[in-house]
Image (cartoon, rainbow, N blue to C red):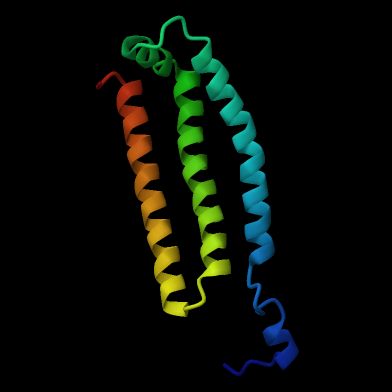
Length: 128
């Protein structure tokens, strides 16, 4: 099928920035969400009667605490991956090294996210 778009229409939105505005906004929204989650985690753990393993496990086995902790784990690794990607894009000049770095960071981030989710679910369901 023949493409009937003009060269300008083909190039529009496909410049050097690509989908940078989307990346920018996702990073900002995840940062705002992280503010609330970090405050919640810090205060929740600070107000535990004891800081031993059994108390933290009992706290995490509450459905609300387990769900919010899962959100914290997922969002923190996702937000870190977005930030590290920007750093690599800005400071690594070689295309192959930049591509490898971004793919490595994404893989590591998703692996750590999965490991964190597994750990929280295992503790929450009582398999500690």
